Image (tube, rainbow, N blue to C red; front, side, top):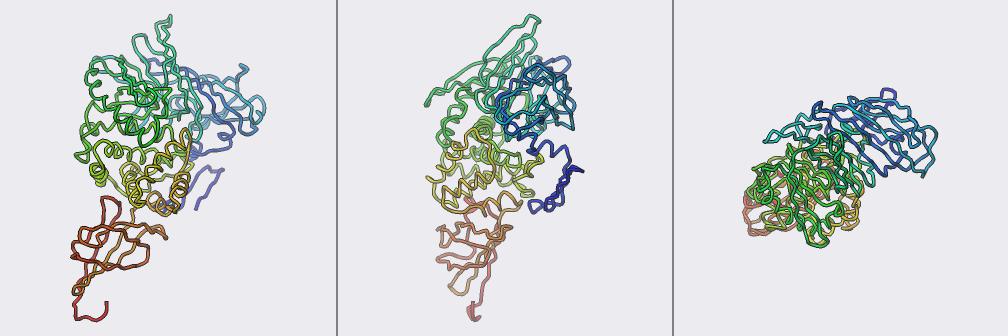
Length: 559
């Protein structure tokens, strides 16, 4: 049940996604997460974000020019900017100031007249303030103001989940992206800014500041827009498979030698991902790794790197295989395909970013070290899965699903691969999703429909169970031995009433083959196998199991 009251402006979800108590969301949540008419009435075409960063007061001042096409006749629009940031003025294209109202982090701008459908217009928002400080970057968003080992200023921003509007005014919803963008950042002389895209200009200003102009020639989602300010050393490389791709690296000067060694991995990452996902999607803008004062973030064409030049996840891994590569390079680079190019329309579907991004880690392992090592890597993630909340979040209120979207997500995709049992088709589907939805925003239905169409089978039940419910399906099996005869009864215990996933089990000693359980009991005779030798191929299928052994006196009648 969904109850919506615009008067009280609360959303109450009753037993939403089948596992939760009633959840209450505020007006602020719906303003941030919902595609209201004041958001859908215009389509972004271009941003020019122009900010000056004052490192002494930890504040910024600047503007964002917003160019858009009118999607429906309208006299107002909504943009977003956190309440603690001050709006100086909002100017229409003719230079006149526009009236506006603020409610929580939403800003409602009144046009001078009704703007007609298909027309092109622009407004510029001038603003200032001290953006919130990140308490735990990159997981809790905000600015990071710190110093490198030499005492030089080092500044970064992370805002995924929290919202890009914590530091600049924009339509803060993933459903709409500008077609291109200019990012201009002015910093104290002696410091460098590294942002997304290509550097167009570096200008030494007469007042002792330096301005960097970066141009992004592709669509970009809001949380990917970034700045990195510090005393960086810069070196370059080239990935030459296919059309040349420039590789630019910005690191602390004292880490140049370590970076040159560690970042050699980038070429193999590109080679593997292009093989399985298609061409690097932002070739004209190049690829950058930028050392950051936090662990990392997938900022488009300017990936933040803070893994301390170690293998694994800052030197650790859930399996020995995980120490064969730098987790941050692999995972964050995978987001150039999964999240930056193919983007979820609502953050409730952030599993599209993170499940496919996490699965890409295993794809890299398989590409470099083989299928068996990839299975070891994937199954090493099981202990980190909680299965307490669904992977899909709540639509329209800026609510992500469970953090299981990472580790459980890749286990689910590995399961689907083996359910299909057709690797050429599987890899065609993975590459197809990455290429056919390139530069688009999509949702779970787009993914499921695409897979159903490509396979000619209906996997809706599969995605419903694994994404919309917290618990994984349980395969209940009763193995019965009577004299020399052994048989297995089996069925699925699942939330989805028509759950019918095939799974491989040992129907004979060391011989795995498919059975086709449903939610009703079925049985099969086993051969040349002791009851205790019965196994489920749990390295291929992420399932729970409930196995019971029954031994029957041969003198007992019936089965």
